[in-house]
Amino acid sequence: MKLLIILTGILMTILTVGAQNSDDPYLWLEDVEGDSAMSWVLAQNKITVDAIQAHPDFEKIKKNILDVLNSTERIAYPTIHGKYVTNFWQDDKNERGLWRRTTLENYLQDSVQWETLLDLDALSEQEGEKWAYSGVSYLYPDTSLCMIELSRGGSDAVEMREFDLRTKEFVKDGFYVPEAKSSVDWIDKDHLILSTNFGEGSLTTSGYPRIAKI
View 1 (cartoon, rainbow, N blue to C red):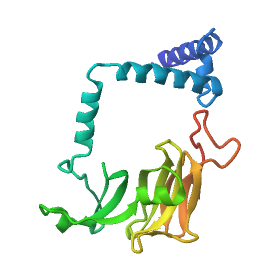
View 2 (cartoon, rainbow, N blue to C red; view 1 turned 120 degrees about the horizontal axis):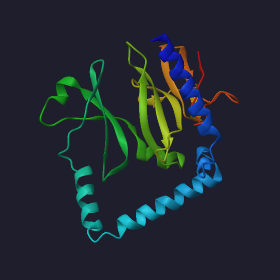
View 3 (cartoon, rainbow, N blue to C red; view 1 turned 45 degrees about the vertical axis):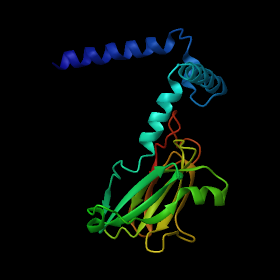
View 4 (cartoon, rainbow, N blue to C red; view 1 turned 180 degrees about the horizontal axis):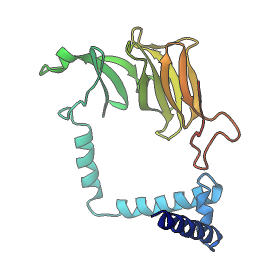
């Protein structure tokens, strides 16, 4: 068994080295943020979009999908935090979306009364950005504080801001993480575990953080 493992390891090494030395005509696509790779992606996207829009039933299918996405009859999927149920909701009147909450008791009623925590459309207009809601990390067990993740246009990179659910406002001089492909978790109200762009050498080749700090 040990000999088999050793031989397998040697074989994998040979194959890996061989692959690295091969004359791959698409190796330039490995530079995921390079100008050539991005130009290729945009060109392929255009080909795909043009082909889809050329379908004779495109407008009909588009309308049917929008009707489903904007339907007020769809389920408001809940996330329970403490005594509250939170939900992120988008429809034809709230393009960027509403982050909202209600009590568990109220959520179980036929007609739910929601309390808006953050209006992404209003925030986008106020700050001149097309913000997209990307998620939230709560301070447990209290859950009155959280880090909200906002991305420009729905990109992987997010800006993180501390938010107080009691005041329904961003915390003045609170935690703030500039735009990057970051992740965060709370230790206590004064400390976070953060993975982000800490500068040279802190990211993988895909642009994601490989280092976590307190």
